Structure formats: structure tokens, C-alpha cells
Image (cartoon, rainbow, N blue to C red; front, side):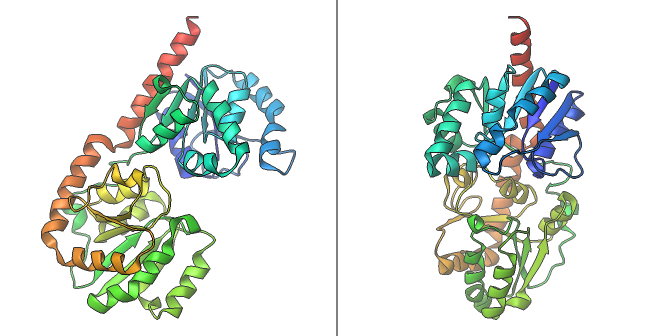
Amino acid sequence: MRIAILGDGSLTHIKRWGEFFKTQGHEVLLLSFEETKNSPVRVIRLKKYLPTNLLGYLSSLAILKKELGKFQPDIVNSLYISGYGLLGSLCGVRPFAVSALGSDLLVDYKKHFIHKLQIKHTLGKADLVTTDSEDLSRIAIEAGASKKKILKIYFGVDKTIFYTSTEARETRVENDTTLIISTRNLYNIYNLDLLIDASPYILKEINAHFIICGDGPERENLQKKTEKLGVKENFSFKGRLNPEELSRELRKSDIYISTSLSDSTSVSLLEAMASGLTPIVTDLKGNREWITEGENGIIIPTDAPTTLAKHVIKTARDKVFVEKARKINTRIILDRGLWEANMKRVEKAMTTLVKKEKNT
């Protein structure tokens, strides 16, 4: 197939998506308004002729159609339902697939009527809609997608990078310090203040060190907060890491924390589960698809640092629970959380659509 992908090329998700199809032998072109570094596929950077988001997208429709005319794709796939999704729905190429990334339906759809109109239009035009959680599927249907056109898949983990094995866990230096890791980016939506607020309570009871992997506009504020609370020496801000570096940090850690205020299926959570950590995550529908309270992880409220601290302390001391969770999580990832297996389903669905279009 010749696949044209529309999406933010600066995002790892979009690069992984394009790379998968390329490795399967398809010809892939990524069209993006954002600067795209180290792309595994060919990229054309689109220019916005107007500053506002919606009009900026629409003002580039003519040049997008021109580039697609040169490439002659068999299918167009937009990743993100508003913005890039709207462009894909208007470009005139069929079949058209759109992939929800989470905040398009969980945040944008509820935020403004302009986003709602874009999303309804896009979903009404789509021949295939991929979602990565039951909640996203439900909202997509409410917003106008046909239930028959929805394919639930996960942005799963690469088992060659994130995995659980005896050899991998031996990289962990055994001592009395519990290593607690967060791998979410440093934006308000990920609510890292909750973890920092919980840290003094945790440190009163156990020796712990907090590893913060990720970057974003809140980094300076969060670092200042650790100083203010007197816990600066117990935090390491690692910044944004490549997958191999991130895997090493996960494998030497004990407890994974996600304090996010919004999520569908979190790839960060799946990576932690695959790496053998015990997850403690906020009470979101997307998280509850993967975590059963007290079985393979802990569910916490988004606004209670003392509750988070209590569960971290309890988990650090409960080796039986930790081992039980590790075994359950390994099985869950192997059953439904692997990247390649999920993407093979997307490839099959797209191939079916293309064959059907060519036969009409």
C-alpha cells in the first residue's frame, strides 16, 4: 500500500506508526505542520498560512491536495481527530482512516463547539476509526462514528525493548532504597505536583528516591517545589529519554507512578507493566482497563497526596503483592499489550479497505 499519514511528526507515537508500515514493506509519506526530526519515513512539512489553528489547517488544504496528488496514496490516515483529522476528511482521498490519540476525544470534544463540529464531521467521513480504550470508543460513537467502523487497538510496547526477565531485573542494585519512577511529560495534565506533595510523607516512613523521566514546561516549577519541600536530593529529573534509556530506568525501579488527570490507554503504563514494576495510577477509565485494584496495581484519587503516600509505603513493604502484580502484568502485556500484534490488526483493516475501494 501507499499510505499517507497526517499528524504531528514531532511525536513519538506518529513516528512509530509510520515506521511500522514502512517495515512491513509499504510506501509511507508523513505530512506534518511540525518540525520532524529523525523520521523513519519521508516527510513533507506543511506550511500554515494563517495563525489560528482551524483556519491555519484549512488554509493548507490546497497544498495538501497537491502533495497527495503527486504521491497518489491508496489510503490516508490522520492521527488526531480534530485538526489533522479534519484535513484528512476534506482531502478527497478514500479510504480515509482516522486514529484517536486520547485528548482529541477526552479533552477537545468537550472543550469547544468548534472542536465538536470538527470531530463530528471527521468521524462521519471516516471509513476506519482506531481507538485505544473502551472510553474512547464510546465517545467516538456518541460523536458520530459508526460502531462497525471502530477498531480498538493499543499503542503497545516493543517487547524487544520493554520486557520482564530475570536477566533484566538483575540490573537493579538491591538495597533498602525504594526507587519510584514517573515517565510522564511535565505538563499540568500529568499532575506531577501530586507525587511531589506526597514525597515528604513517603520519606518519613521509607528510604526512597524519585526518578522523573520526561520534560515539559512545568519542569522548573516542579524542581523548585522539591527544593521548597526539602526533598530536592531525593529527586532525579532525567529529562526526555530515548526508549532504550527509558527501559533501563524502568528495569532498575520498583514502583511506577502516574498522577495524570486524563488518559486513554497510557503507553507509559504498559511499558512499566512490561518492565516488571508495580503500578500506582490515578482513577481514570483508561487505567481501569489495565489495572484491577489490589490485584496488579493500585488505583488512587487525583488529589490526595497522603493517600498516594500510604499506598507507596504499603507497596514498598509488601513483597508478596509486588511479585503477584509482576506476574499478572507480564501476562496482560503478552495477551493484549504488544505493539506489533496490535498494529498488524490495523494493517489488516487498512488492506481490506483498500482492496474494497479498488474493486468498486
